[in-house]
Structures are given as structure tokens and as C-alpha cells.
Image (tube, rainbow, N blue to C red; front, side, top):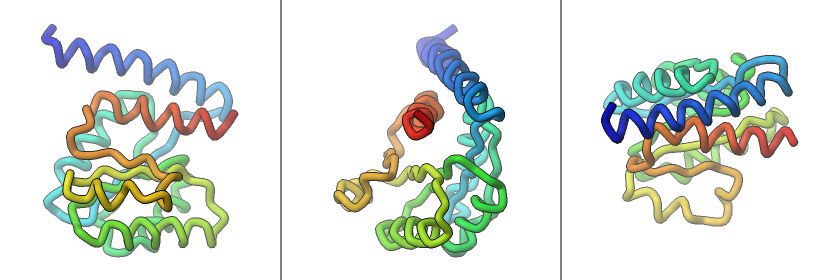
Length: 157
């Protein structure tokens, strides 16, 4: 087993343990919806959804996101605990604010997470995004589920 496979397995075991803990507290596996604003990110969505599923998540894949409101409605309709948005655009700040505002109006408590290219990272260091898990494209995919589940468990305690 190579170094990357070994690291993946290590995070998978840790994340599955957290998923089991979440399941014992909530009576079900953690649910997440994954979506992207561009077709170019489609293969990434499938790959990330598969990884999160391996880590113990119940995963929904959103159709191509055409509006933050529609993405938020998909999250609400599927009763998810978290959403993960993949973006490559410059107007990420407006999309994140729109999504957060819409969910707040619905009184939804969904963990918000986002992966963007490195160019968007400076925009996202803003204090207004302190409730978001902001990941960059270089984040190891083996760590995604672990990071998200840690935050979900912090919220439930």
C-alpha cells in the first residue's frame, strides 16, 4: 500500500468512527449534499461524493447549481446536515452570502462548506465567513470528511 493509500485509510478509519458517533447521537448517518456551479467541476463532485460516502456520509449530489436558492432548497428537501459547494468563480462571495442568507431565512441549521480555487481564498478570509468551512483545492480529499464531521459533532454537543 502506497503512502497516499495508507493516509487515506487512516483518515477513513478516523472518519468512520466519527460517523458512528454522529449516528449514535442523531439516529442516522450524517447527510451531505455536494454541488458545483460549473460543469467543469462535475467530475470533482462525483469523486468527492464517492469519497464522502466511503467515509460514512449519506451523500446527495445536486444537479448543476443554477442558483443558490435552488441549491439551498435541494439541501432542505433532502434534510441534510451539511452542504459542500465547489466553485471556481470570482463571484463566490456573493454566492456564499446568498446561500447563507436564504438558509437563515428558512431557519435552517446546515453546516456550510466550500472548496474553491486558490485565487478565491483571499476573498474568503473575511470575518463574515466564520461560520463556513472554507477549503482550497489543495486540501487532501482524504481529510474532507474528517474536517466536516468534526464540525458537525461540535455543533451537536
